[in-house]
Length: 351
Image (tube, rainbow, N blue to C red; front, side, top):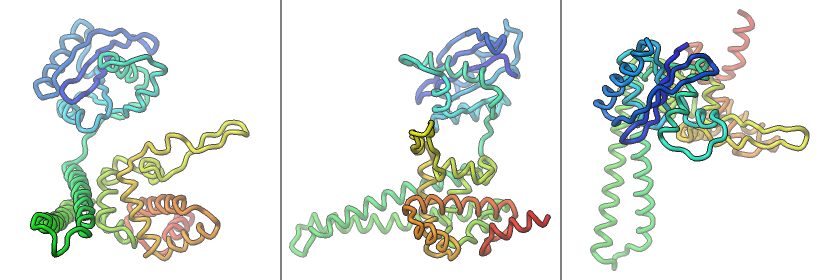
């Protein structure tokens, strides 16, 4: 257990830091507060400030635990800096910290940094030390995100073309015709860039033998293609960050939770939309293709629909089923085959 906890509240330009000394689980003493620039010189100043504060406490940097909220890209540079210098770093969900702090009136950055430090001190039994993704996973994530931006831009371009197409005629002015021509040119350029990005995704996957093997297993399922498979590999950290199908299904919102109380309350959990919606969209696309092209999953979906299940619930169930098959393929290092799950269960029972 670390007896010096450092709470860091990150923003784009600066970050606020509060250091507390943990005497025991019931007594925390705030020993200092400061603000630094969210830049390399600010990171160095932070470490120097911490060393100065902990010297009278007879502490070392190994006794320190740096805790911060996940804030998109704003916190990653600091996390990587501290990790490279072999300090203990905890990157926790902002929602988890906020909901664990109880009822609060008002907020500011200084109070938030103290709240984060207190959370780290109280919940060290839940500590998961930060470890950055490998360079190949980082590259794959960036390519997947970049492709998604390009697809959105192409969709906007196609919408404009369709809207303008009804108004541009032979009698239209030269300006309208010029705009229509440029939009078609832009659409073609975006198509070419997307093709180039997809080739680069394939190259990144092929550069790692393990990643390539996992990719081959995943794409052996009818309905799962390059885009879906690369997104699953990227978001799961090549199955190292999210190690089970159940956790992945929860992460992407493919599991329905309920609020139950007595006999009168039975409703869906209001937090059901707190998930990785981008990954959910990729998996929804894979599920639609699988329900069309994969005989096993198509038969499963038809049975559920015949029982009166709603289409969106069936699609969610297919996503869940797909994830369990994918994780089983990776675990058993094999390609997909019909009735894969039944055969794996028989092998487990036989063993």
